[in-house]
Length: 341
Image (cartoon, rainbow, N blue to C red):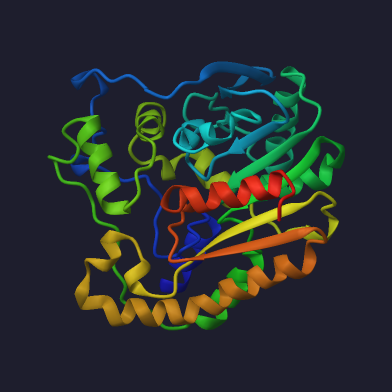
């Protein structure tokens, strides 16, 4: 059972392995009621819906800016709003756009189209509609699968690639997990919110921030509650995209690529809900000690296989490393985008 759980976490791109998907089932199985309060998204961006297939529209956010286009893709289950606190850092020199993939948030929720071929075709359709010829793609977590496939399939449309805690060979890692974790390990489960935590959307947002340890943009959390429900892990889109991992074709990438990794070596670097479980601290550290080399091996594979690749490892970074270490990640990205490395 434990090995199966670890396999699922890797497949769903919870890269720290002591993290969990944001989706939580509130007490009583009911999502917070949006009508209980009035809230306005404070981030400056323009909303546009782009038709990518019959009856399929993708929610996009244009953060503004002029210059070369930088397109942000969120992690599994997240929306374009995941970038509300980070993407505006680049509008001084770039045109900045973010997409919510099909099946999530305000984008259409069709019954199919969650394979990698369709997802990257969706990205191309957005670029075509917006008259964007070439783009730098920035992807968090599971979006790494789309970045790699897009770069291999449409190389002339890609200027550069930036992977944020996602550039891993997941199939190879799953094999290593199967051989490494043959016995169950007693590690904590993510806490469930109380009735008070789910009384209003604001209370739920506070719960997520408190337990995860980073301020995931509020608009992202609210959009997921409103459109996907409190347990989006049960949706077809979530399960399909999460299982779409493939052996990365990194050796076929011609564009320059930067991979930023969050590396967790100690329980002290884990998320607050993990650190709070003092009784299982030793088990958690043993777990990290075993899983660490599996991740390290995959990072080395990226270094070896990507011809024009570079790597930044941030020790103690959160899976949402562009929030936990925003300044450092932004600086590394600027140096990469402007060839100042």
